[in-house]
Length: 484
Image (tube, rainbow, N blue to C red):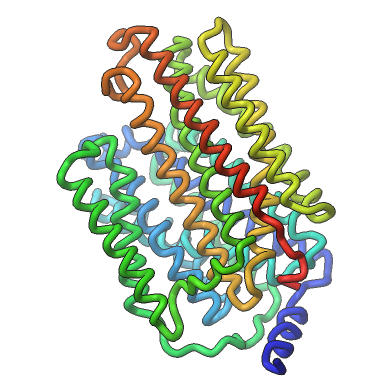
């Protein structure tokens, strides 16, 4: 009992009370999330130019995207554990350094091999920047401003998503594709200086360590990387191909072995006892389903606008930006409100509104004009903005204080898995609705009724997934005293 009291007191002492310092902390972690998200999208529009410059095929150049995403996601559990072992801020600074060096190497790459390996290094650093911000907010900021901080970070991610492709296009057009990576270097250096200057000195880690869980690291890394590869490449290679089925089966075997091993390990990489905190578990389940539905519908919508509404790509992009604009506006407000009322209330409202929006859009998407899709985008931008910051707040509040790094890692892993699973499943449902013609098939290849039926089925599926998120949110009741 004395040890527990000492732990709680040491955690309480780390809370930053200086308002100016708090702002620098929030700004630095928001910038980190922005950079990680931006670099996941800024490259997309430059792929044809990179392929032409390096004399490789479009299939080969796609490895630039896949390498970054695979490494970023598969190393999240490692950083979650490491930050609980050596300290959150040390891992955060290391992440900035590795990400900046990786960006430099990407920018000076002269062949495809060097570029892909450099993207792997960039993803390895980005994983640290993506993993620990939630834990830093919970550990170092007072409880009454955590929701607002989560709102700022969520908005930073939304901005990175929104401006990624347009910014990449401008940089590639006026400079060269190398500068989409080199632009990170001065930003990274400034961010490192800010972190060293304004972040608090880290206390010695109280939690004892019995040696790093190497076996758990191996199982989680290869299990996640095979799972992400299967879900990312299934549509391109074929869901029933031996490579995808073999990768998916191997990932399930490795992840099952991970669960069995971690239950026996004295100091596990992933302590599954954290899921005995039901509030933490249900809030993460809600998070998975929301990202599954949101990513699935965001993947389908461009094809709906181009194939069903015959819009040009540029105009379709402008229409889709309405979602991000509303989401960016609502996120910080919802975060601040979640500091004053139970976050669960906002999460329930957000998932319920998303459910209703999907049902309405599934029934109106055949109507003339753009008003049904604009109404859907604005409504879901509002509802998901209402959900994300409060849900992040209650996940980290429900987690034990000594496992904030691990909890943050689980949150980010669940987020990425939900997004990738959503894209894969929604593409399968859409294609199955019109005799398995792929989603890339042109409008002329698919009868109009089958085309609209596919889109309608996809959004009915989204309604079901949001219903599951709503149920999980209703089951989440966070005890605010759990994290000090």
